[in-house]
Length: 481
Image 1 (cartoon, helix red, strand yellow):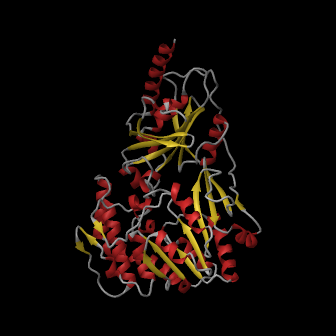
Image 2 (cartoon, rainbow, N blue to C red):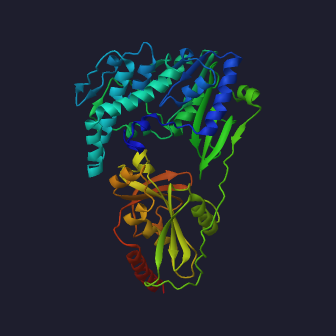
Image 3 (cartoon, rainbow, N blue to C red):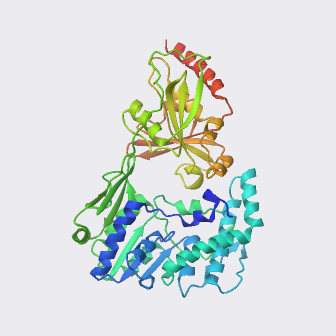
């Protein structure tokens, strides 16, 4: 069996469109086809998520054309295109042309994707777990290629017959923008250069890459809609940005994604879309029921000492969110994939959330994908102690994170060297993290600054962490008085 999690070939087929957007587009694209649109164009095709949705809406692959500038998309697209020629991709590793075994498009595509996966894994940090994964990809190469081939076969059964070309998004759009029978569906990158970082092989793998400009969301979306403003083709494009910053005045769809982030679907002719949908659509997020732990909350005047008992208990997201909302009066972060409750002397005293996201997708301002993310770390209110600081110190302990590691995230955890967190603030530094984590990047943000802090894992025990925290708090209190 191939590896699980983000080392599995399944990572090659991730989709970036979530359910609400897919549902909206499936219905809209079906109605546009019935209205008379006959040509479906997908620049930035990525993992071909939206062509699959278009096919589900009744579009024939023969009416679809796709493009992208990544090797991954070009391998899959070449496999789907009846006229595709893998030799034209000129895939090389360390300057040597990768040999193909025959004429079967599925076999050739599976082999090239396995080569790309292998060189990606070889570019990871040099730690034992990555070395084992690389060795597994080599020792069981046939099994991994077979697993990739099965996924490709499923995609070919649904999209085989579309046309594909490695092509810059702007060149492709300009080539089709004057066709009144064309629907352009665009899911542009959320991060500038995100795919380049995700598929980084440290320069070992090269191919006949087309000339292109990296799509910068900040400037790309306004440029896109300025270009398409009066064009006969119909554009529907996804954008992730701050609330109120959609690229068009009338988005056809909107959904809250996270703090300070909405997903918008924009069109160059929203009135045409509204005629089919009945007006702008909003994807509502169903909130989960919040549930407290079966524990009393720490009293404001509770005496915490070095002899106090401290426990760290893994909890579900709805439990963590209960305390975050109670102590912060508003939700300020997306729930972590692993949540831990801090219990002091039998009382709920803090909560924290982890995520392995920075290990598997690009994070702006993070130079190396070798750290987990601290999504939040909050302490209960207290008369004298800064318990949020205690929660942060506990979160930095390797043993704390181990409590929420699952089989799917175990490799990401083993390869990690520490923790990072992101702060959005009007101030040039986050004073609450002073002495705990070091700033690794600072960027301007509409609210002031986007600060990224990082720190290596600590090997402290919870009891030792509590003792160290109390010692530092005593010194801090003395310095204030």
